[in-house]
Amino acid sequence: MRCVDRKGNEIGENAAQGRVLKALYETAAGRILLGILVKPFVSKAGGFLLNQPVSKAAIAPFIKKNHIDMTDYEEREYRSYNDFFTRKVKPGHRKFDSVKENFCAPCDSRLSIYPITAEGKVRVKDTEYTMESLFRSRKIARHYEGGTLCIFRLTVDDYHHYSFVDDGRMGYIYRIPGVFHTVNPAANDVCQIYHENTREYCLLKTEQFGTIAMMEVGAMMVGKITNLKPGACEVKKGEEKGYFEFGGSTIVLLLQHGKVRLDSDLIENSENGYETIVRMGERIGKCKLPKRA
Image (cartoon, rainbow, N blue to C red; front, side, top):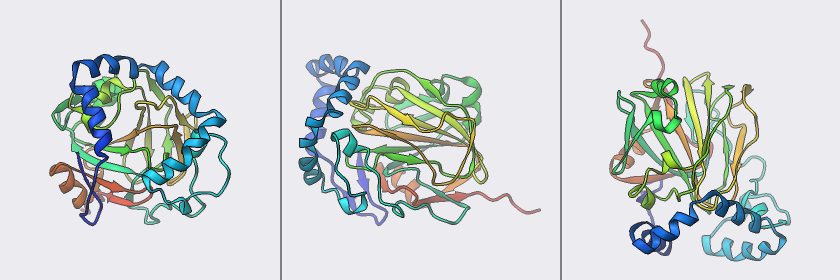
């Protein structure tokens, strides 16, 4: 899937990674290997290795290869590769837009936006999903019929922490166990990754944007989704919600019908088959204020 920044500049994809994923998902031999790689024990084993001190040797080459600007991040010595991967930005970086009516991105990512039909269905590229299967709950799915699905796809060079998008009350966290497909769009052409992957979600009753479903989706080599709060508590806009360990991963936000007006450039990019690069705290829309009588 092609990608642009908010100025309309097209961003190149990792060609080598694309070839590997194409081989895994589109060839017979690749699918045999894939059947093993997506198992939870593989991601857990990878996570264990990346927590070992010897894994520090991979940090410098990774920074160089992905052109990561480390001036954004706290200056300290890392104990392991995973310690580096879950690094934090310096205080004051990734600040949320201060206008309370503005709807902001929860994380650094590549954003795609999809309309949800009145029947609770959504088509991501050529793959159809239902809200009932996504939540495994008909009761919750009904709240998002006719709404909007926002997919924030994090790549390995992104900041892998994520935050609450508004003041409000967070409900309990639900975990749906599954496998760990890559969240790269190449996989979505072959399987229903958002129905099959391990994921966690909660409902956030916000002051400005209705009740938002916030869902974290694990991916290949992401053995752990760490949410910092158990749920059923008050939260603040911009407060950290959690983080992912190594690998690509995804945040999915589900918006109720008529609650948020997303920025037109993001909608247009998605309609034209582009993801858009956004940063945590950046405005991506605003609340739809009720009409005055």
